[in-house]
Amino acid sequence: MVGVLRRLSVLDWIRVGLLGLGLLAVVTELLPVEDAAGEVERIAPILLFLVAVIVLAELVKEAQVFDVIAARLAAAGRGHYVALFLLCTAFASLVTMFLNLDTTAVLLTPVMLALAARTGIAALPLAMTTVWLANTASLFLPVSNLTNLLAMERLGLSTKEFAGRLWLPQLVSIAVTMVFLWVFFWRRGRRGADRYDPPPPVPVADPLLFRTAATVCVLFIAAILLELPIQVAALVAAVLMIAAFAWRDRSKLTLALFPWQLLVFVTGLFLVVPTLSRYGLAGLMSALAGTGDDGDGAYRAAAVGAGLSNLINNLPAYTAVEKVIPVVNQDQLLALLIGTNIGPVITPWASLATLLWFEWCRRRGVRVPMLTFVLAGAGLAVVGVTATVGVLLLTA
Image 1 (cartoon, rainbow, N blue to C red):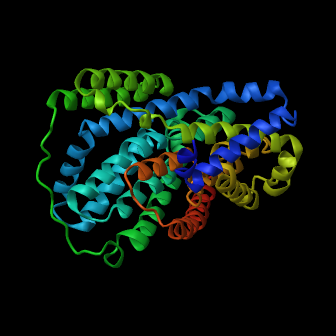
Image 2 (tube, rainbow, N blue to C red; image 1 turned 135 degrees about the vertical axis):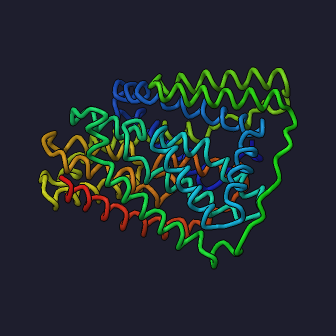
């Protein structure tokens, strides 16, 4: 037991502490048991998705699918960093927009990290491309982000209307992100090389396991595109991969596959935030965001959404602020959406996608300098949210 406690990181202790606070709120009846049960019931599909998709991604990685994709992506860049940068940003943006940000964080992050290993280039620029675009490219479609689904339902917009309203703000958000990625992580002084050597094709150890994993990934993506429940799609895909490894390579099926840290954090989060809302958070959000649908109201909502996302996570931040914005204030609500989608790039817990990304970096031994992560993310959040809200208002 002592050995297990010693292996806990600072973030692990934060997660455990947050769950402890949530449970304490329930025990002391600061959060009624009925409300707590409702929150747990609400997040159960999210927790199921998180567990299943991490297990799926880890086993697909073990089947070498990501290594093969990474090698082909690097070969397409032909040793030119600019070409590789454009390929990676385009790939990350498209996956986020047409699937969702959590899928990008789980399925694309291993591709980027495998790409770094295969080419011998620094892992951090590739990893940052994934985590930033998983957040900032998640405005375009309802499926891109759970907050989008909540906003579309509240505003009564169709998918076509939603995309038509946000396509230009989405392009601006991606463009700003690309500038920040290049300046802080991809330019010559940061990456440390002029060219890279495209790797040779990856030899596959178990072709049958590789083909099975690739097929499961395609089926998983198809299920999402068909708008099947994402937690069911992830669970079925994970079960198929577990069965495949039980048949071909049982040594990879270990308890380390189970992401207990994320389960602890998310559960604690959805107990603490409702408790705070009962004791003044809703009133504070109303005072900060205001109720105006003009430019001032839009920027205030976006700033509150971004700030609160980096304090407590973007999903509860969106739900907390959405409640105080009148449904007729479409621009203000969409500005809040921009703040909670683009803004959560400063703290490790700001979005589930960022949490998933940190989990992958931890598993693959990628060191993320926290000071650089926070300061560069703060700059991106300020410039990205400001520019994107401005375009939203200009196209109203």
